[in-house]
Amino acid sequence: MPRGNVASIANALSEKFTDVWKLLSETSNFLSRTQIFGQYEAQLREWLATLRRSPKNPEVTQSVKRELVELRKSLRFQGYDLSLGSQHLKFEGFRNDACLSEGFRRLVLFIGDDGVYWLAGEDNHVTLCGFLDERVEKMRVRQIRERHYLWYRRDGNVLVFSGSDTEAKDDFYRLERIGNANPLLLLSALKGLK
Image 1 (cartoon, helix red, strand yellow):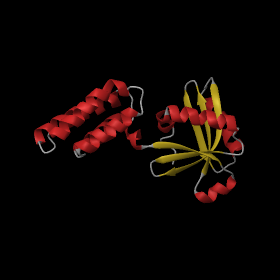
Image 2: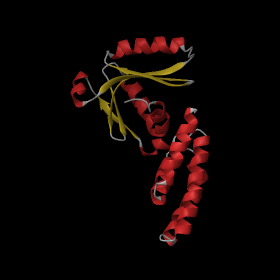
Image 3: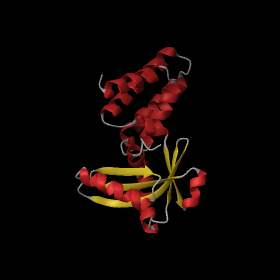
């Protein structure tokens, strides 16, 4: 069975057993972090008002839930990853090798015209950069616009980035602006980062 079908079945089962209030909250949270929020804001408010007017009416609850599930299905079909709605990105200045004892790990991050590429590991940042350079060259990636040498740690649903000694301050602050303007771009690209 193709992976997309497995994910669709899992999403459908999860949504079937999720409370309508939680589903509305997760959907609103996700959409509020996208550029398409304005297209759905009125509908989200309408669903909220409907649920508040009739919180104990099962027909109303089921109707809103059906519509929410259809919206979520449509968003996934458009390529949105709704699981990122609860994820957050945080930037915390600069760190050195001592942060290993705090659970941080090394990460090299490239941003190119075709996407975001990354490599995490135990080697120093310069070595990791060399490995990632080789990888993107084999992939025939044409244009890398940014290179970042970072420390990262996952704190629950928060991905924390700090600059390393190899990272230029201006570069780190530019990445912070990119991440704050569009956190889903980085969170989506780094979903597999453990």
